[in-house]
Structures are given as C-alpha cells and as structure tokens.
Length: 453
Image (cartoon, rainbow, N blue to C red; front, side):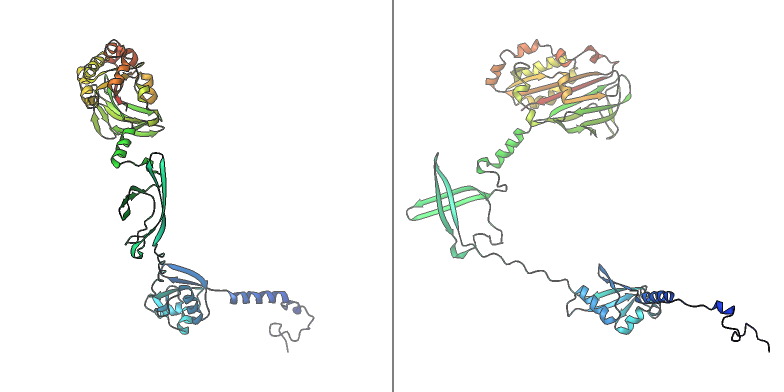
C-alpha cells in the first residue's frame, strides 16, 4: 500500500525533514497576546452627562443604579423633584435605536440601560428634572438700632473764641437714629445751619442741612450753587473766533491744513474739518474765483471757513496780553469808529469791515472801555498755523484781541490812547502787503477776534 505525505505524516520519522516545519509558540509571544486581550477588555468607555446648559464627562458606569447615583450626585436635585434620564437615539446602540421611533430613549431600569450601551464606545445621557433653582441665602439681619450716640460741636462764638460742646444724643421711643423709615443709612458730612436756643426752661438744638457728596471739600469751599456756576463760567477762557476766506484767480482744488499748538484746542469747526492727527485739521476744497468754497466731505458751499480755538486757562493773563507797552485803550463810543478806520487801512473792503463790526458788536458793547491790539503773523502761527497747497499764496491774517477795562485802568493807558492808536502803523505789525489786493494772486484772508477775560 502506498502512503501519501498529503494524507498523513504518521509514518514519517520524527526527526525527518517534515518535522522542521512544525510551528512552536514561544512563551513571550503568548504573554504579549494575553496582555493585548486583557487591555481590550479593560478599555474604559466615557459618559457625557447633560443638564440644561451644563455638561460633564465621567466614566461610563456598568449598571443603571451606578448611573443614577452619578447623575444625582452631579445635579443634586431636591428629594421631591421629578428626575429621569434619557439618551438621544443617535448616541444609543444600533439595536436600541431601531426599536424607538422618537428622538429619545428613556432609561427606566437595568434592561433599558444595558440595551442602550450595547456595543457603544461612549454614551450621552440627559437629565430631565423640574428641580427649582437653589434658594437664595437668607438676607443678613439688620444691625441693632442706634438709640444714642456721642456728639461733639466745635463752635466759634466770636472771631478767635472757640468752644467745644460734648454731649450724648438720645432718641425718643427707642427710634433708630442711624436709619430712615425706608432703611437709608444716615451718615456722612453735612453742611447747613445749627440753631441752639436757651429760653427759660426750653433748651433745644436744631440742625438743618444737606449731605456733602465729596467729603474732601471742607465747608470753607462751600458756596451757593448759582455762585459756583458763575465762577465756573468766568474761569473758563473765551474762544477765539476765526473766519478764513480764500480768493483764487481761477477755479482749483486745494487742501487747507490747520496746525494747532498743544496749548490750544479747536472746539468747533464749520464745515467740519478732518482731524488727521498730530494736532492737525484738514479741509479739502474746490475754490472758485468769486470766493465760493466747496467742501466735499459735508457737501456744503460757503464763503469762509469758521473755527473756534480755546487756549489753556493757565496761559491766559489779560494784563500780559494787552498792556500799555503793546496795545491801546479808549472808551467804547470811540473804539468802534476807530476800528473801522484801522480795518480800512488793513485793506478790508467796506462790506468786509462792516460785517466784522456787526458780528462782534455784541462783544464790544458790554464794556465801558476797551483795550486792544493786533497780533503779528509770527505770534498767530505759534498758536494756529495755516498751510495751503497753492503756490504762490498771499496770507493776510488779522487777529484782534481785546478786553474790557475800568475807568481806573484806563488811566494806565494815558500814553496809549486813541490819538496814539490813530498814528500807529498796524500794517507793519500784521505784515500787510499790496499783493493782498492783487486779484491775480491766490490769497488767504483770515479775520479773528478773541476777547480775553
């Protein structure tokens, strides 16, 4: 009988060639595979608990009882509140999702829980409860009522004679002196009137006042509200009001840039100027020969630009700006007619100087006497400099500063009155030239008025 190696190898010697192909598992390989299987079995699955807008991640419990305990420990519902758990069908196992047509699987016991987690790597469980929010902490009990407290009065009977009254103030019927009926605490510093009366057997102390909002202000600085408002308005320097007109021989575009000294501030511009930073304000205009200015940003057509500049109050000293050494003074009735003559000498037309007087007459008229001067172009540029993208350009800047003075101060200008002002050469001071009348030149005319108070 013939034997085939494919049928059996029992007849082959054990030490034959075929015995060399027997596979033998080493001990290390078997241990490694056992460890892998144990790690696969020990792989933890995760649980996402959701309650309203809150979520947390935990290890997935093995039983429904453990799951409910974890959920209650996290949400902490009251004992009598409705509390149940549900799993969205997209997070449950495939077997459970097939049997439910709604969006949730409600967990009612161990069976529903085991079916929901069958074969899933993680589970999302939502807590459904009508538990009310935790109650607020009880309010802090009010402090005990204040029925008496010490009082000290420092009084000045006469200039230089001061006394101190130390006493104890007690409330009637044990009324709380620290609070009002609505609970408002009565404390702080008060400013008012203290009335002490001793008449026969009647001895009374009556105080009427108001609480001071700022305890750092001592009573020496307290005034009537109307007085305080007047002092605030007086201490605020008045603005310099400036009109800038441009006369061009032909229609052209140009930029007008105002560079303001840090000690000055532009409080108003019309049309509105563009703040380009570094204390600079810019106008982009189209200028017409008749004096019309088209401002593209505001889509306005005007005959002049208007702006107001306010100086730093610390730098304003009326006696230093206008004094007999640099200005002139005269009564108001002579000042207006004198100013018309000066403006004529400075090249202003009849219409321009009439408008200048009419626009500022309300500022001149309250003063019985007026001291004035015109500033030089250098001093004006130190405060507000003007640059125009047109070359050549003729600048004429008339900056009038004035202040009202009393009859006594008028005597200080004995050598600087109307007679001396009529003979003064203001053209040299303001830098006026004949080119300011040349219609073929690009000209800038600025007229400004500043009342120093």
